[in-house]
Image 1 (cartoon, rainbow, N blue to C red):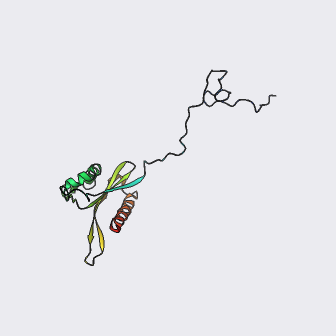
Image 2: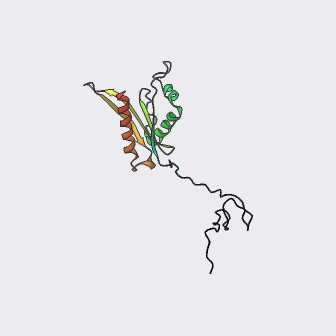
Image 3: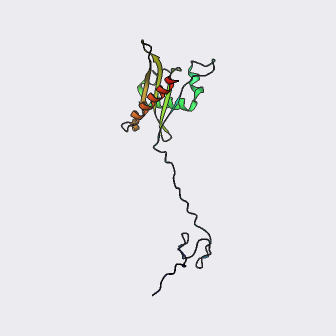
Length: 165
């Protein structure tokens, strides 16, 4: 009966024969280490919920208060907003005026935009600051999954941060 000695070579992960890593295989002639790599911790962001905001505050006076100021503030987000508004509010596409004094938010799942919100600060008669949230919506395939609740929380948080400053 044969006994295995501790000095015996281990099975190679590349060719499957018994020899040590880095030593030439006596059967196939393979030399070297395995080229198998492990990803120990990789962030998976396909379903990550994020919100990006922009407004046209701080623009130069030549475009301040115009729709061109929105395009200059962030053309990519402004384009997403226009596309999402057409998908979310199809019957109101021509009715929605572009208010350059409003603040805009776009929500994403992964890298896909899926929701829009527009809000503007206002003052009540007693002097307290409030936010008027307008045109808040989520695209149809993402509804009833909790994204609207998370998005509304983000709008309230952003409003709180802006009013606090």
